[in-house]
Length: 436
Image (cartoon, rainbow, N blue to C red; front, side):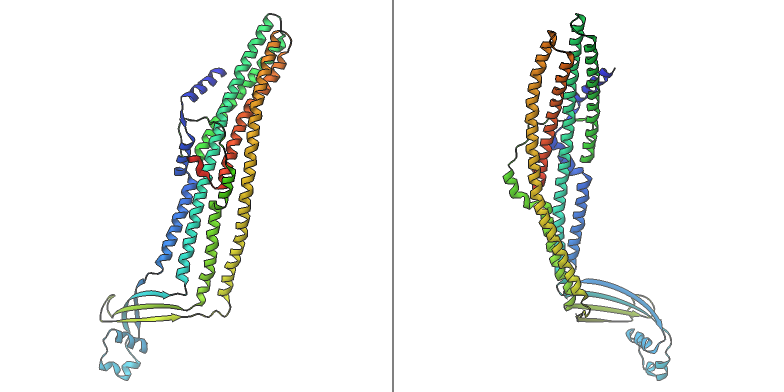
């Protein structure tokens, strides 16, 4: 029953749709929640940039005020604005004790910034720098997603290749059991050889089922990283580990997106210093207002008129608050410069480290291939010796164990090589290479 279940699963594997690495990467860049989240952040910063540019445009304001008063000055002013003043209103008695008067004042105002100490221009530059920084971060986030997808895909390839290795182990164990039974039937082997072969076969079948379940798990993990269901699918086999030109990548490492983002934020803090100091500079603005006054209802035109002018404002900060806040931005800039230096040094180190891991993986791969050849030859000799009564079944199984181990280590080394290759591209900021 167990064998039938394994065959059914393997039958499904054969006829499932194969999904290429480039296809899942393209799907991830369109559907990954991490990328969508980063794109929303970029959109928000784009709106911030547009908002900063809008500060240069005139501002229009409409106000409606209702008042009722019998205070002499305000009552006289309201009636005067309503253009209802008569000779009787200059009677001292009426001036000193006016009747309560209602006034609806409608005011239309337009304000035009002429010069605000450079604040608007600095705010616009800061928004531009931040927009570029967020743009670089979005690109770096996309590189992170591609790296995750690549590694998840390689884990799925590893799991699929592990099924093949486990299947080979089962087939070899079946052959060894058949050989032990044949030798026992003619009296050239012990019953213990048959029992050992059966135990080995049982363990090999258990490992095969584990490999099949593990493959299903890593495929689901790949779907999580991609951000969309792939249905009933299989991953494709990969060839040899890609070649790397490390000298070319070392020239590109300082142009990584996250490094570029920090450089843009340095510019933002430099501009923030000037933005804060602008509070200590004169500010010039123009304005125009149009008034409607009525004693009966809003927007009434009993009296109307306009007021226009230019204003100059200059604030003197005796507590040096503005200066201290500007200096705080310089300290933040210095702090960010230290972080940028560390990031650049770390980028070079991470690239060297990942390249060392890449070379280690290549050595592991060559070693595993050589051990497979050696183990296959030793196994052939041991089987021949066993048929002639010169070796024990336990010797055959020991060699078979080493062969299974070498086969598994080969696919593991290939997986490690591909992941190290991706780490190199990621640390160099050149992940797009895998999409070509």
